[in-house]
Image (cartoon, rainbow, N blue to C red; front, side, top):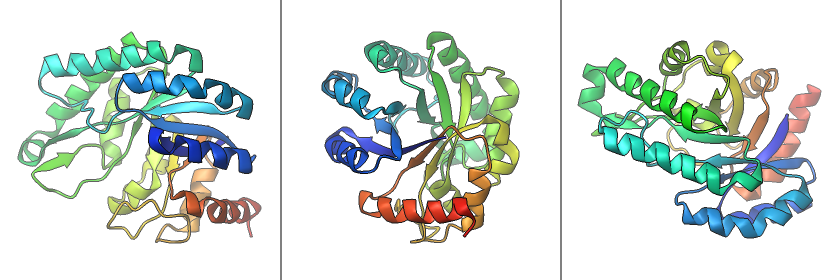
Amino acid sequence: MRLGISALLYNLDDALELCRQIKDINHIEIGLDNLDECIILQKYKGEFKRLGLSIGIHLPMELNSCENIKYIQKSWINFIRIMEENLSEFNIKYFNMHLGYVISERLNKNRIKYLDNSVEFLKKLLEEVNTKISIENTYSKDGDFSNIGYIYKDFEYIFNKIDNEKLCFCYDTGHCLINNSDYIGNLNDKLMVAHLSDNDGINDSHLGIGRGILKETEIQKLMNTNLKYLVLEINYNHIKETLGILSKIKRGV
């Protein structure tokens, strides 16, 4: 399992400094929102290699796989295909994405319709790109719009419809604390990436482990899976403290 941290372009220099200081960190997941950011990323290519970092990319939060408008759906697929081409020299390990969002009233009336939209989107995307796609659980607070993908059954439905080794699951502990669902118990065989963070069960505040309500038993369950990338999606000031706690959990202290 590779241990990573998350970053955006604005704090990538700080993230790399952490990687220099903490040799156990050998993976980085970078959030990119625009294609021109791929050009900016080029200047870091040598440093990624020097530090021995594998790279994942978090796709834009605006991406919506359950989009009804076909033109927009095709545009997102084309966006990801071009991003893959622009990052071809980086050996990107995966693109991570949320499933998207729907007007709450429509989702409540016909959830399957929007899951089928996601299935259609993902099938077409997997035909267009060679990189693995990890789909991440999220949370929803039932406003005018609702995120989809906050219960394990949404992902179970998708994986039952798509049999493709390039499609995998990303388990976010912080999101699960807000909308609890047994992802590990039901999606263990699809799990490849995890985003590890803590919070109070209300706000996705990306706290270090031990600063919220995440139980160590849940972390133990996660560590006992065949996880390939564990990404600390937390405040950088909490990284060292969290690594100490993870070390104790591994040793069973």
